[in-house]
Length: 153
Image (cartoon, rainbow, N blue to C red; front, side):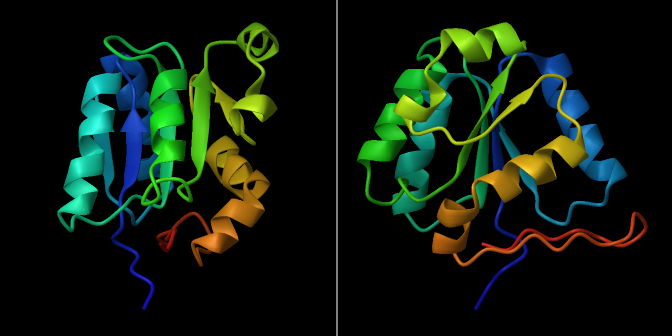
């Protein structure tokens, strides 16, 4: 059965950007909890947590420029792990110039959001990862602004 309480994993080293992202989700009444990993190494530690039975996230929003292990390396490790490779990863980039420097389709990234993140762009990005998203049997229910929005996983 689908569970609206599967988290969204936000991998972001900038506390201000993480706070803005979480506030955007709260303003739009996102029902899913948001977990934050503050660097690439911490993001990779989630693999063990998921193997131990913690709920996998319905999506991962990840900054490209992370300390300890950069976002591209984290993405490669997630993609090589059978438990993680179906989780949609949405890169957070600083500008459209960053997008042009990265070959996102070659990396397997079908969606990105230019920071700061807002909820409408997040929903649009989730829509863009449709095939991967449907592989998780997940649905985005776009409710009116006063009603919680649930992303099932």
